[in-house]
Length: 556
Image (cartoon, rainbow, N blue to C red; front, side):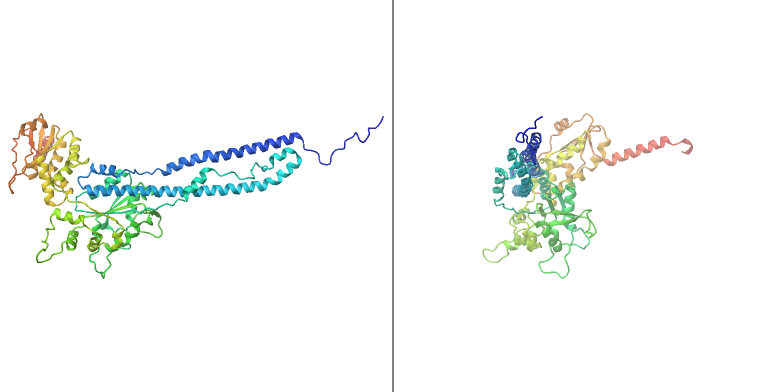
């Protein structure tokens, strides 16, 4: 047999060519890796920003209500009578304050988002550089093996792209937006001057309710300087923390009302030898808290303990309202405006006890007057807005008892209605109550003191009687002529008013003339005067008769 020639026999190469099946598998693997990387990039560019946008919207939505000044004013009108100038100033200031808080939240959120985007870009650039460095050698070897490897020259074996991806337009937009100048807004705390019972505390409560923010009402008279008997100034922040449900974010956006702030004034303008721990010392301790700083508050309240736990509360966005009667401030203002003089054109001395004179003086109060009264200049400087309330006259006091949403008459009507009893107070009775409260000088707070003492017997007797239809209060009851009248049995309020009419006549024009008191004919079981003593005597006699019937004859 003849051997084949050497030219027809092919010798195996020293480096065999890669199998087509292996190349196809490698190609498919690279395509899968590339597809996975593209999906990751799509998720990062579409899904994650959407989720981040939703989270940002949740973070941007404040928990408090930002109402317009007119809406706040209308809300105050439902609870507070008069004080139009004060309500306008408070509404505008509170609206601006929470706009400022919203602006600060938006700026902080934009800064966090910008920092996160910078970190993502730096991380992506580092990953691209690492993948390019690790994939270069594998791509070169593959290109030597097959022309298919040329397709993978621009990517690593792990699918990482060597060339950086173009930046999205959103990134450039955010960068340009971040370069814009942001303006930081300062807060404007408020000092409320005015006589007692003029609605200072009620306005602060109503504003907190309308804005849906926590409110802490603190009595400044109980505060002392650190290290002395009394409450530390940090206790006001702990009260706000409790009112907010121990929510730190709500605490840092709440309202603190410092009541009776005029009681912490220093005793004299000259330097005192002894330390004023409850006056000037408290004002100095409040300076940083009111201005805005991070304050460490004991977690359990009470005194500071170096070994205890603390809560760091930032007071930058807490609105402080300081209120006080500032009794005697009119004298300080009088010395500045209407100094006594002699000769032609001299100003006559004014009656400082007159309500209208006090109101006019309080409206013209200046920081120098408060400094002369006893507040230190540093404390006054942290309250840019100074507004004053006016004393309520008799007409305003009548409106206080009837018009507000939570008025005194409406409260009594609801309270007696819980027992199925009507409550009727005549116009003459309302006028008499307002006149008594105006003479006492206690303002709106004095109204309840008058009515509570009047209705004690009625509150005691009526829950035990089942046939009482109405309680009738007229001018004679307020003057102390008789107790309120009970309408019982078949006698209803409508029938009674047709019979006697309403007590609405005015007082006599001449000074000292007594108003006419209508004489009401009493009828047993129909029209009776509230008599708690008779009611108690009847019950006591009935109890004695019941005890006597139960006694055993052997022990009689």
